Image (cartoon, rainbow, N blue to C red; front, side):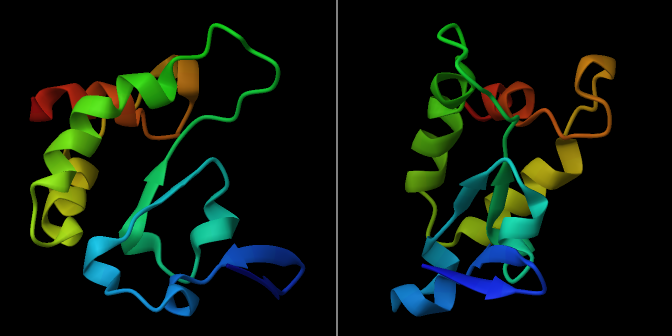
Length: 102
């Protein structure tokens, strides 16, 4: 569920009524997860790219995450191992790090 906050729509996970340690946000806009950055899995923006496979590339990571009792520990490990590639500028390349969790 989103709320309008300072000119941006922000995802407010607390509105879901679920334990936050079991919820993630997959989004291309850091502004959308400012309430819960510790739950975020950033992805690249895409527009009409039928060859985009970023979510498919993240499947091994999501499978590993589904076996965790708490998403924070794995997301923290991912955050510490993100690879910044020139192609993506300063944006974390999650799918590269995610393949390490097989």
